[in-house]
Image (cartoon, rainbow, N blue to C red; front, side, top):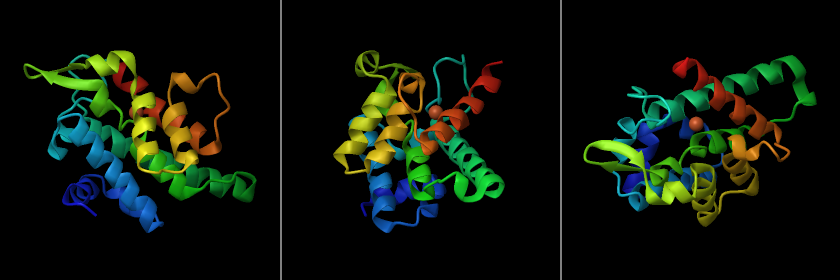
Length: 180
Ligand SMILES: [Fe+2]
């Protein structure tokens, strides 16, 4: 694993909860690649706002990624406790897709004169598209690509998997109350 990927795991320790070692490495590699391509440093994840829709948003992309992942895990644990095998959840897929759902934002955003704004690429491809492309490049399974591509409004017209339904709602509850 590259030093940058190791750095990502230190920043997003939830990656360690992924049981499959290969998947764990790929998830960290996607983040490391995205940061390089976007011209950021790993530490920037804690200063990039997670959304441009909340003025002066004080919660970073790193904070949001971890909060959404923790929310998704809680939802999954509660569903399993309530419904057992009737609701099947692949926890490795859920964790990988949650950690990566907004990875495309480092391509969607750019820092301009100290302010983070939409990048030219971001005006053409929102993060579900760029994030999915990055994850495809690193050989992530289609179940994870689906979660990234379908987590937001772009996925509303499709049929989401259980893991994608969970990330969609986990993301929503970590956004709407903050802009209320
Ligand atoms: Fe998100």
